[in-house]
Image (cartoon, rainbow, N blue to C red; front, side, top):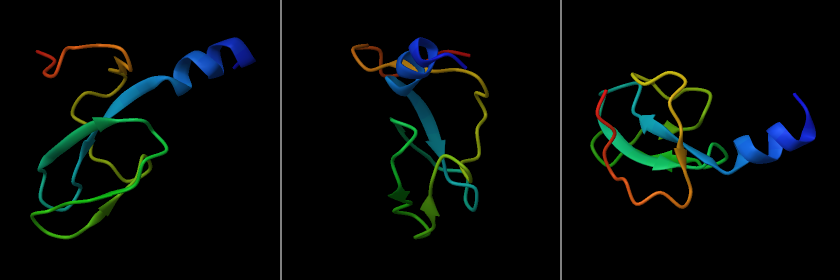
Amino acid sequence: MSTKKARAAAKLQIEFVCPKCGRHLAWALPSVMMSCPACGKWITQKNTKTATEGVYLPLDSNQLVLFR
């Protein structure tokens, strides 16, 4: 991946879904680590359960919900 593409990808948010209970948590930057309030599991980009594989949300987007 070129550095220009890498910089552009770093500014995109991904959807975090708990792999344990399936709760949709938030759209956030890939480097974020968050805890599921329902079951307490820690979620990172590597273990997030993604229903929207390959769908990203720009940082400056006002869109809160993506319709699939």
